[in-house]
Length: 185
Image (cartoon, rainbow, N blue to C red):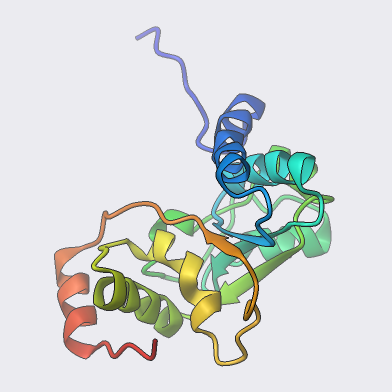
């Protein structure tokens, strides 16, 4: 067909493009102390980390993944890209799967941590955004607020930016979350 394949995350140009998110954050809030980044294949995490750390090296860049698909965390621990990666089912399907070699190479010295969240925590994040902010955000994006809902409050008294994206949520799942959810916020 003559079409050009563009990888979703394991490509330096894609990572560079994702870096505009970090640049925009730093332009609007240069004194941010932490950026919470939903993490799948690693393009957004790596690109954001490059831009943020160039402007504010003290700002923490934290990747967030579902416990059911910890490819980024394991890739960082093993210093080896796990792509492809076989994962458990997760409602954060946009974050499921492998972590790319190019994002790992770029991000391994820039990202401060990768945190994992359970399916229950993902559901709570989706519910809280609807209940408290009137935002419908799919679990793959809502994971960005999961650390803020954690009982230990790791970002208390910290200027935090949460990257929220995507409203592609299954109607049945959304109905179930709304029926069963209770916001603790």
